[in-house]
Image (cartoon, rainbow, N blue to C red):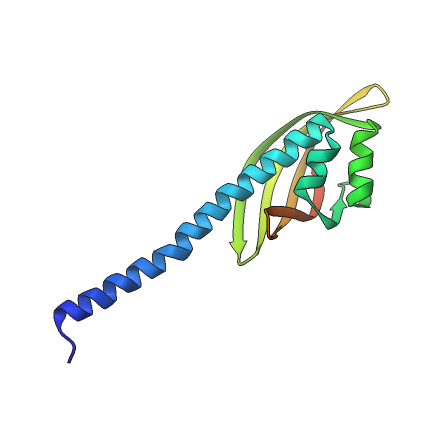
Length: 148
């Protein structure tokens, strides 16, 4: 026989259980936002160790000009200083978590220096992150050029 107290307990438990995934998702969103910031900081610093830590071994990194790099190429391009990122500003960031995969879309205003010439760009970026045993890691990135 179901009593009000039992029904209230069952409904209360259901509410509690429903809140757990929402809280876990909010926590994952915060971790992913921090990982995005760490990625950008590592790009600005051209820090191979940090770039390697935030990137999955299977990384596919797409540039707005159509160039695709793997993890080693992505890191080498930055560490070699052939292209130097002087600034990165993020706007309109949206994070969607689906299990152990998350997508991040945002716009970037960047300044790079190539052969002594400063080049401002505005990009629309899609990042794909995967929750791995120790942390969220970037598995894919694609950018498109936006009008300045």
